[in-house]
Length: 415
Ligand code: ATP
Image (cartoon, rainbow, N blue to C red; front, side):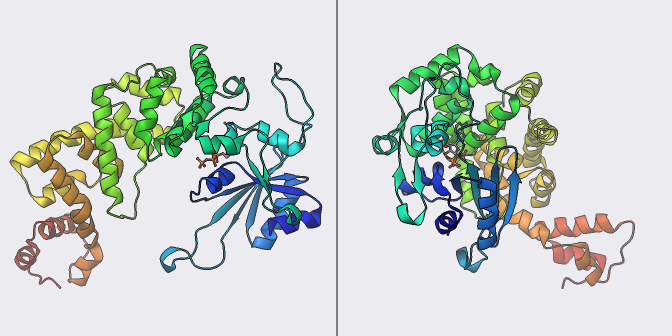
């Protein structure tokens, strides 16, 4: 579709970046990146019209995002998920070269690919009908994919953008590749030159978050430690034995939780950040949040969650010896965010307590949702000042398996 449209507009259009890489690696591809030699925004508008999608354009960068719903059915008969297509304009004239690089005349697609992070991401496939499927590989990307190496395109790559250090590690671990020899040297150099210090908190946080969301976040962090990148981000970060052990537990808990197929997914980055900072004094936790310029709401959540988890663990230990009822457990955990509950499961060494918390997540929290004020009204209770209290009593009785007795005492029969 894109190819035929480009043809009619007399533009060259290419699929680029992660999309092509994942295609060659035979991995699932999600979103697509297109580069147009011509007017990218006009092209995106025309393509969106054909696909029945919406366009968000950034005139300044001459880029656009198309969001559309593909026809047909998605998984399990659900409506298909929205797809995103990023459209960029390839242009020679606006690109600013770092001073030390040779200025050579390049075609605009070559120029576009040259600005990218690694060879494996600097591959394009032509989509115009007459050349459909032609691979455009100026920098040995196919060879590097075959040999499974991460290589930068030139020696100033990390100077140009130090977030690429994190990206190199992330792709290396995700694909089980190896960072190339020269690229390894360049990373070490960049660390020694303290280039990470120059990164804004927002960019650093953005890239770190992508890393902490990966399935292999633990391997990423260990590799970061090897390169001394963690300390470069914040000096108190360390993958010592204790932190590593806690993160392994967090990984286990996340895998366990994923198998429950619950509708709500935890924010993995937050959970991992909790693990990384577990032993930090509050001052350092605030320091991390400041260095990463974590936005105010998430910053508050992160800092509150830390103290909330400590308090909750205390309460749970008391509960275990002094109470032990299901309702007691439910009321301790009900207002703790999911990330906090999973963190405590990973953090406690108490196997019994872990089982109780798992009961809360898999059973009690669902049962609790089944009782609402409307049920009480249906039973003939009038909403009044004690209504909330009664609701909680009924809820407690239900969780503890005593609802019929309680309702009988109150003079109502359970429906
Ligand atoms: P993922 O599967 O993690 O989304 P991706 O390769 O699609 O991987 P994006 O972050 O979406 O990653 O970036 C899309 C493309 O943009 C990359 O393939 C790469 O070519 C380019 N790119 C992204 N970030 C940088 C960067 N910091 N420096 C240079 N090129 C970059």
